[in-house]
Every structure is written in C-alpha cells, then in structure tokens.
Image 1 (cartoon, rainbow, N blue to C red):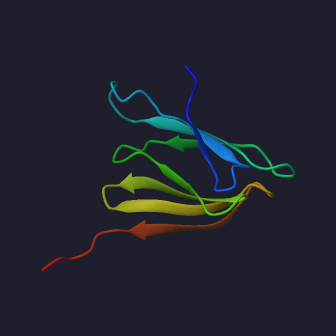
Image 2: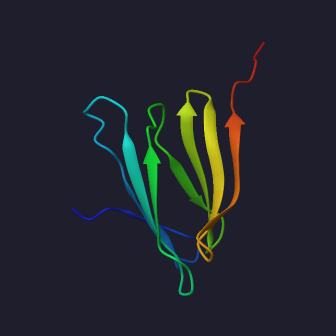
Length: 101
C-alpha cells in the first residue's frame, strides 16, 4: 500500500509519514521521509517515544518545514528544518499549559 504524500504549496516538495503500530503498547517510534525540490537534501526524520500525540509537520515554503513533536501532554519540541542545508534553523520547547478561569 502506497503512503500518502503531503505536498508543499507549489508541490515541488513532499513528505511521507510512517507511523508506528498503535496496537502495541508504547513507546512509539515513527518516521518522516522528506523530499525537497532540486538542489535540496532528502531527509529521513526519526521521531522517538511520542506517546501523547502524533508528530506534525507543516510546510512553511518549498524548502522549510515546521515540526511539532509532543514530549508530554502539554510539552512539545518545535523546530524548523531547512531542506536546502539539511539543518535545523530553529528549535524550541513549547509549553501549552495555560490557566483558565
């Protein structure tokens, strides 16, 4: 069975997500395979131990992709990956624990 390709806006780049088997107990290990436009690098991204939510990638443009990997229920690693260099442009840990009244 062929996996779904998630294309960038101009369709010059895409990624394919390979989720782990959720029928087995955690930890879960998934992978993304990213293909950019000519002149960029193909990148295989392994996501380890994401129990709380599936990781998410979103295209920012044809060469940069934003990712969010949940580390805990309200804590995520967020990053921007540059396919031209194969390097992380930015990474941060984001906390989504807001107080409500």
